[in-house]
Structure formats: C-alpha cells, structure tokens
Length: 387
Image (cartoon, rainbow, N blue to C red):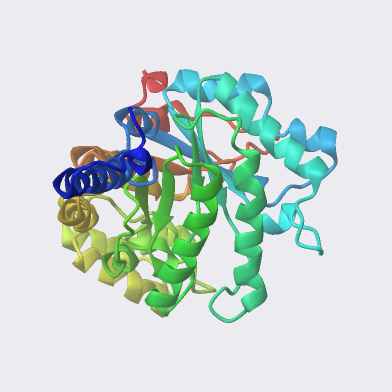
C-alpha cells in the first residue's frame, strides 16, 4: 500500500475517504482492545471450576509456630496436600499475614517469600488451585495510612512473584475481612490494590470483598468494579451463637451452647436446653437462637441475598469462609455444615470451609499434633473422600 503522506495528487474526496477509514479502524481497534482485554473479560469457566470446593489453610503463614525455613516448609507435607485433593477439595485458600513477609523497609523478605511460593507450587502439584489471601491480623486500614500503604506494598511485590503460576489455578485475594465503616473508602483502596495486581497479572481472576468483615451486608453496599475478571467473596458464620458459641462474649456457658440443636424444629425443646444453665446471659442468647427457628431454609435465604446481588450485577459470588465449632454436638454440627454447603451449591457459589488446623473445621489432634480429615465432616461437605 502506498503511504497516504505520499499521495500528493489524491483528490479531496479520496483524502477524506482515507481519513474516515483510518478513523474507523482506530476506533474499531479501541473497541476490540476493550472487549478482549483480560482485565475486562468475564471469569473463564475453568477458573470457576477450580474454585468449586475449598478449605482454608489457616495458620501456616498466619500464625506460624516456628518461622525457620525448614519447619515452615514442613508444616504441610506433600502427603497432606495429596490427601486434601483426594478427599475432593479443588482448592485451598492460603491465608498469608502480610506482616509475616513485609520487612520494616516495606520489602518482602526473600527467604520467607521463597517458602510461600514453594508452598503454592507444591499445592498445585498435588492438584489443588490456590487462593493467595492477604490476611492481616492487626492492621487498622481505616485509621492508619501506613497500613493502607502496607497492603499496596505487599501486592506490588507479591503479584509479580506470582507471574510464573498458571492463572487458571492461582487466585490473588486483595484482603481478608476489611474492618472498615467507610464503605466508599474501602472501595477506593480495594480498586487501587486491584490495579496493582492487574498490572502484574492481567490474566488472573482476582477475589474482592465488601467492608464490614467481608459480610453479606458489606457486599450489598459495594459497587462492583468495571474489571469483570473478578469474583466477590463473602464470609458467613450465622447464627454465630450456634457456630462460634457467641465468641465475642466472655464467661458464657459454652457447654450448654454446644447442646443447642440444628435445625430448630421444636422451639419448646430448644428452649428447654437453653434453660439448662444458671447463667442468665447465656440463657437469654440461647433462647433468642431458639426463637429464630434456624433451619436450612433460613440459611438458603441468607445466602440468597448474596446470590441475588451477584445476579443483579452479573458477577460471581463465593462463600470463602464458613464453619461450625468442633465442640458443637455432632448432629447439629453436621446438619449445619451440610445445609450451608447445599445452600451455597444451590446458588452455584464456590465455598471454602474454615479451616485446616482450626476448631471451626478440622482441628489439630492433640495426640498426634496433626490434622485428621474427619470422614463425617467430609460427608457433610458432600466430598467423595467421606464416602
């Protein structure tokens, strides 16, 4: 083709035609770029498939008992990773306290980062996808600019470190349970962190959440981002009187709370259990639980709010934390876990139990110091390893 700038004899009409054609091609290119840009694309089906059934690895890089390199690596042996995959889990949510990796100068400790990346590599070799979750324990991001900067510093270095991993099996999660009252401020910070991640990982599906501890209420007040290759997360433990023994209150009669039923089919029978304590406050909150008549239908309605928000905005939503205390009576605990899991699956929501090595899921066994995958819990979760 003869370049336009050399067509000195071209007619005015021809010049206008060529200019118009170039303008059309320019805007067509812009349109195509927007349509096919990974940051704007929908979440691929194989990404969603990898996030069907998950388990949180709660303490490995969150509260490590021993931070020496060898002991860190040995926290979860390859055999345990294979066991999780064979049980039927498709992914793990790897909870990483940023303070564990960040040095005082804002740089990630290279030795500790190497252990984390090796853990991701080993988990994926065992057949598991990995959510890389920034899980701070003491940050006050609403009040402290240094903590907000810490989140961005973490992702400016962690995201490039994840480039070598398959985006179909590696999912960055901006931050766990933001305790923020200013929902708009959290949205701005989350979008800033997303931009940092996206610059390094254009093909990755990123997990976002709402303020207010990543609750369904927090999600309902979140404005979805323009980036379409994201999944929105909620965490849900309601009714917490049952699942956590109302952990926020001290001095309760937890032995009585552990006897509460699920589902509540007979209010009078439930209230009789609640009356079996002399502790007035415990009796009151237990009676309120009974009056709420918690059952599988209430769990479906609760998760239905999150699912409805997802449908409204045409985005996927997952439940990346739920669980029930291991000291809860077995009938109630297994009934709750099964009902919750079924409700999530009914709405097509990915789920992840909390957690591996935690009292809300699969606790460490005192006798062995290792985690045992309780077959009854696996059955409640509908996993083939529980058959």
